Image (cartoon, rainbow, N blue to C red; front, side, top):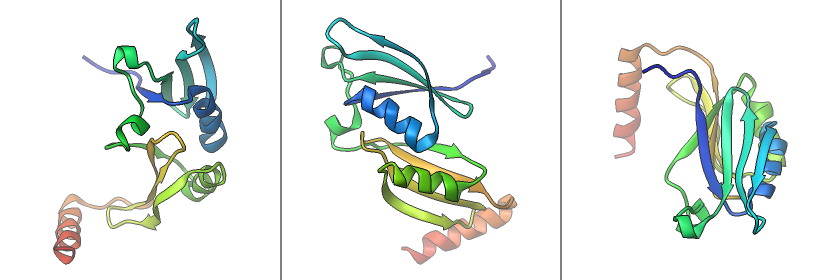
Length: 148
């Protein structure tokens, strides 16, 4: 089976606000939205670069909750961009909370992590250089030996 596209589905408290925030913070384009009779959003489709993002409000009756229900999230969504400094400033200006500041990493990326107002964790990254696997392994070992 081959995949030709990627879609990420996120549940959030306040999907309408989340859609607007992703548009402001990441330059997302809203494509479609469907509303159930009680006013909740069951489907908001956004495009961020080549990523399709589907959003939905919480539906407790379907056991569908956002990260705030669980007091946090255990995953991060990474956006790989050409100008990470500009993307970072845009997201922070929109109200993202810095979890890990932008930094040049030993694995050849400039990256950092942000938390959006809806509890989702985002990594923004820009490729700086290719790191050969043997060097990458050595640097990883050094990094984690220093922190032990």
